[in-house]
Structures are given as C-alpha cells and as structure tokens.
Image 1 (tube, helix red, strand yellow):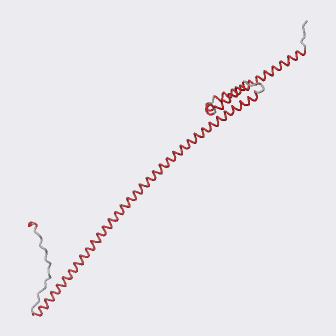
Image 2 (image 1 turned 90 degrees about the vertical axis):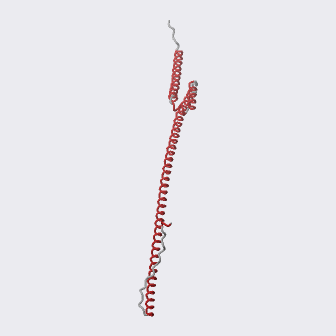
Image 3 (image 1 turned 90 degrees about the horizontal axis):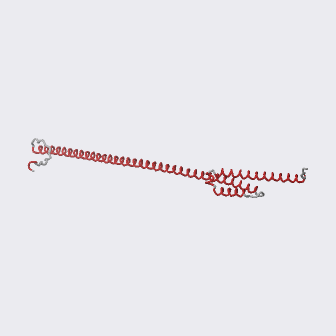
Length: 222
C-alpha cells in the first residue's frame, strides 16, 4: 500500500521551490547587472583616449565593479548605482579632458598663426620702412644735385654778369679815351690855327698822338 504525502509537506516543498526560483532569478539579475556594467567598463577602458585622460576615474570605476561583484544581496542595488555612476564619470571626464586638450591645441595653433602673421607684418613694415628710406635718400640726393646745378648755374651767371660788366667798363673806358683823344686833337688843331694866325703862317695839320708800344722782347735774345 502506497504511503500518501501530507498536504502540508507538498505546500512546504512548493514554497521552497518558489524561493529557490526567486533567489535564482535575483542572482541572475544580479549577474546581468554586473555583466552589463563590466562590459560597459571594458569598452570604456579599451578607448585609448579614456585611458589617457581619465586613468584615476577608471580605477575608481574598476574598484566599484569589484565591490559590486562581492556585494551582499541587500547592497547590490546601491553598489550597482555607484559603479554605473563612476563609469559615467570616467567617460565624461575623459571627454572633458580630451576637449580641453583640443582647446589647448587649437589655442596653441592660433597663437602660432598669430605669431607668424605678426612676423610677416613686421617684415612687411621693415621692408616698407626700408623702401621709404631709400626713396627719401634718392630724393635727398636729387635735391643735392639740383642745388649743386643751381649753384653752378648761379656761379656761371655771376661770371657772365661780371664779364659783361667788365666788357661794359672796358667799352666805356675806350669811349672815354676816344673822347679824350678827339678832344686833344681838336685842341691841338685849334692851337695850331691860333698860332698860325698869330705868326701869319698856314697851320700845320695836327696829328693825333699815338701811344708808344712797349718793345717786345726777342725770343732769340733770351
């Protein structure tokens, strides 16, 4: 005769089975949360930019994952939240650091370009200054030549004026000498006429006095 199982034992076994299923489901859920966060962390840690710009944040996220894996059932939700936040912090920190590096790099490039532009402008200013200096020097030399030409022309004009004045003086002197000679000739003629009238003789024609030329030296006697 077969023994029958008491109803209360069947109910107990059913309750135990249900608890096991709940515990198993919870454990699977816990494992899913950990695996999801671990996969996310691994992808983040594999990014060279994150490893370079947020190593400390990665270390804290890794420690949070270890704590989540070893956490008790009552603490897993809190530890999962902490691990997820630290992973997100590592990602955001890496992005911020990367953007800052890009900003610094762009700023340096901008500074380099501005420096190159300033050097080009300074070189152009020096070239323009040198061009203006050469032009000023050329104008000064041309002005000096013009002043020298004007001075030479003025000197030539003065020499010509002096020569003309000397020629006029010589002509006036010759005219005065001619007038004096004519006057002397007229007086000599008048004197001869008066003398002839007094003596009753015909007057001799008066001959103008000629200048005695200075004897030239004989080259052969030197």
